[in-house]
Image 1 (tube, rainbow, N blue to C red):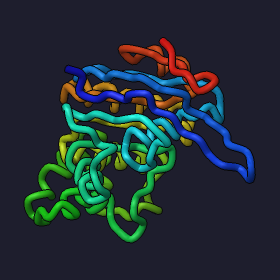
Image 2: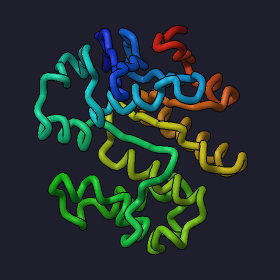
Image 3: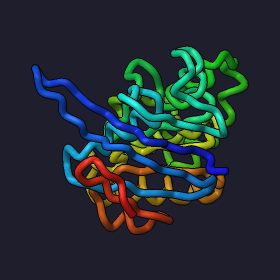
Length: 223
């Protein structure tokens, strides 16, 4: 059984009197431990697809099945629980909380889940060490470089030991050196943790380092 399946996912937006369909019956089965890239032109719906798979946006029709459970039938609270416990998400922009330190940002998903600070501090520091930001653990977000911010966001995405990692252009806002470092860390940590990953990217070089590469064009996903 696939870890995650998208079944006949469609997404239609209404612009005035005109209906625009950007996803047209997407089918995707994601096997555990496999790292998959999704590429496509700007505006093709890649980010929308990732948001739907992460229950951040609802599809117009279709189903999303995670470990045999239909996420589309779950209420908002159950979907939030899924995102917190089973999903890691990295965006193009880090979305770290500026009033907190790097360490506190990494701990945040665990604190939201009701775990105490003492319980989360050790695992968070360990992840910051893995992404090479441990020496900056007490710094606020504005004191970190762009690459350090994104590596901190990667550590935050992994803190709850998710089964699935969704990455939306995780290197798109970085220069090539910082971007390659973030991708290499993401790739290595996914391998070490046997993590399933879906990454939207426009970087063909990075896409071809993944186990599989799919193209989204004209609302259709193809290998």
